[in-house]
Image (cartoon, rainbow, N blue to C red; front, side):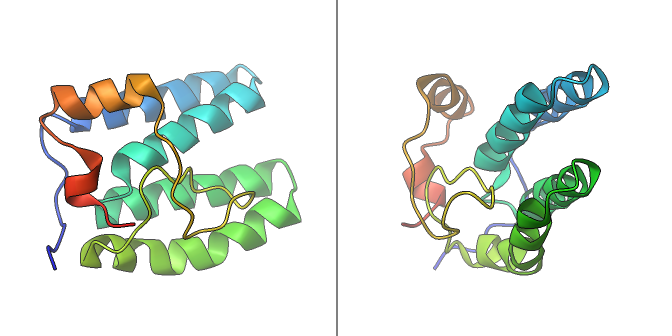
Length: 130
């Protein structure tokens, strides 16, 4: 079992970009667009405990903001367990992290995100386990 701890420097700018885009869309009132960027940040960061937990924290705050009990209560266990699973390398490939998908379901990664992983020298299957 490989223990994942720190996101690579090549992947960090893409993760930050997704969070920055989330913030811009959220401030502009584009909640659908904002959520999409949180999901993308989740896919990029889910192999790394701090980054994974941070995205779930942002998702929890998003759920509180829109007053969605489903999003809030869906994020609490993910927030508590997600980082631990990342550390152990026991997370599903491509999962978007929302309460609308099973937490252990692998999902297809969009082509542009696969390009990001490849440009960072990472293949998701080498860091994530289905």
